Length: 160
Length: 104
Image (cartoon, each protein chain N blue to C red):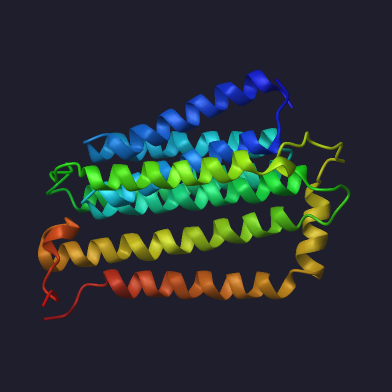
């Protein structure tokens, strides 16, 4: 694994995430959100999970980001976050980060280098998905259908 | 610099806390959804990193969990944004501080 690529991807991802969390204009935040998820997909590629990276790009950048942009356009009246930034949220987030960082750095078994691994092919993922994970796969299909019907019912115009 | 598991965990912890910051400090419903999606992505990154740095060879359990998690996050985003649109239709606002009709 290339450490220069890692540093570049980490800076891109975290800067875009910070922009998405702090920008005032909704549309700018939505576009930064898309860049964040491209960065996370690049991490998946770096870690050798190419299929998950591709799924991440398709689902998040292709579908969820477009859905968010559509929702922003449909709720056009307040496109700016008018609320004042609250310091308590920042303090809680920094405290949680400090706790996580302390726990990670205190655990010596986490500082291992990556072992050699054979490439995870899409064929292997398909085999595992169709044998050991066939029931979770069916449940996710049912969940997606239910979510689609639920979303349609929620936004349906009510007849007067 | 050799890449160890803890560096990936630190990056994903940072991403999680930025998402937490967005959820806690923003008052716009769509921003809160964006923060939740970031926290879910940080969890996925952890799953993939633990799979990659675990003892090899092993079945791709971490990859499977990440794939299912992405599917569920997509369903959550679709229902959440539909809820935002429905709330906007009733109250003409998406500011979560003004949705206080049930407040005692």
